[in-house]
Image (cartoon, rainbow, N blue to C red; front, side, top):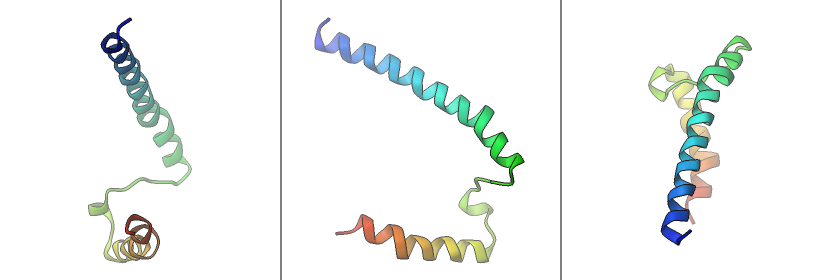
Length: 68
């Protein structure tokens, strides 16, 4: 196969794997986590105390790693 053909095949496989991973997350993992009391919330779904906690974690832990 030419490089372009190889890349096209790799892309097809990668898309298939990403679709399968998304379906597994949506249909299997998230429901099981929810039953165990573990929730993934959007930032806008958090109350003010939770937002403050997330903001502080970002500022103290994540942001320093992102900036030189």
